[in-house]
Amino acid sequence: MDCKPNVLCLEPLSAGMRSLVEEQLSGHCNLMFFDEVSQGEAMLPDADAIIVFTRGISKESIQKAVKCRIVQKLGAGYDKIDLQQLKKQGIILTVTKGVNARSVAEHAVLLMMSVYKRLVTAHNGILNGKWFKTALRDYSYEVTGKHVGFIGLGSIGKEVCKLLSGFDAKLCYYDVFRLSGEEEKQLNVKFFLLEQLVKTVDIISLHVPLTDSTRNLINQETISLMKDTAILVNTCRGEVVDENALYDALASGRLLGAGLDVFATEPLAAESKLRELDNVVLTPHIGGGTMDAMQRVAVRAGENILGVLLGDGPHKHDVIQL
Image (cartoon, one colour):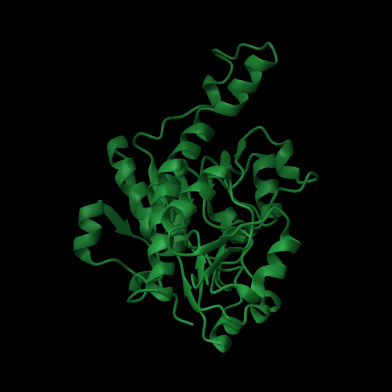
C-alpha cells in the first residue's frame, strides 16, 4: 500500500521547473501535476501539501483541501492567497523568501539600463530596417553616477544596492522598517523620507509587497513630485503603480521613461495604453525566472514541504504568520 503523502502542484509549471520539483520530492511524495486548472481543483481533497505559483489559491479552493497541512508558494509574494482560510483550517503557509532575489535584482538593473539606452527602440529599429546610430543619443543616459532611490529595501533591494556599487551610483531608500546604521553603512545607502526620495532621485526602483498601504503608492500625486528626467522601475507588484497616471506622465514627457516587469492585470491587456509608448520597456513578470533561481526555489520549497510532512518543520524564516 502506498503511504506516501500527496503533493499537488495547483497550476501548470514549465518543463524545467517541474523537473526540479520532481528532483526534490518524487522519492518521498506522490506528485500530482496537471495541464488544466479544473483537473487541479478536482485533486484538492487528496492533497497533503499544495504548491502554488503565480495564481495563488482562493478561499473556495482551500476549503476543498481537507487533508492539506502546508501550502508552499514558489516565490515570496502571497497577496493572492486567502490567509484567513488557511488560518481557519490550520494550514501552514511557507514562501521561498530571498532565494530569487539576485535574479530579480539583475532584472531591475537590466530595466534601468534598457530604459536609459533605449534598447528596445534600437533593437526594433534594426528589425524594421532603421539604423539609429546617432538618432537616440540625445535621449540616452548612463546609470553611472545617478541617484537611485529604493522604495522598500528587503532582500531584493539590497541585492540591487550591491549590483549598483559598481556604477558609482548614489543610493538612498525609504522603508517602513529602517535598517541599522551598520547595515546602511555596509550597503552605502542613506535613509530618506518618502517625499524627499521621490523629489530627489533620478531612478526609483520599487521593492515593496502589495498591501493596502502600498496599492497605488505611485500615483498622480507621487509622480508630480518626481523630476521630469526621472525613470521608474517596477519589479515588485503591478498594483503598486497607478498605470493610468504613469501612462499620462510618460506620454506627456512628464517622466523620461519606465521599466515594468509587473502589471495590475497579467497578462497585460491588449488594450493597455502602455503598449503604445516608446519610452517604456515591458517584460512579462520574468524578474525571478532564471534556471539558477528556479533551482534554489525548488530546493527550498522541497525542504519546507518535507519538513512539514515528514520532518522537523519548515525553514522558520519562510513561514508566514497567519
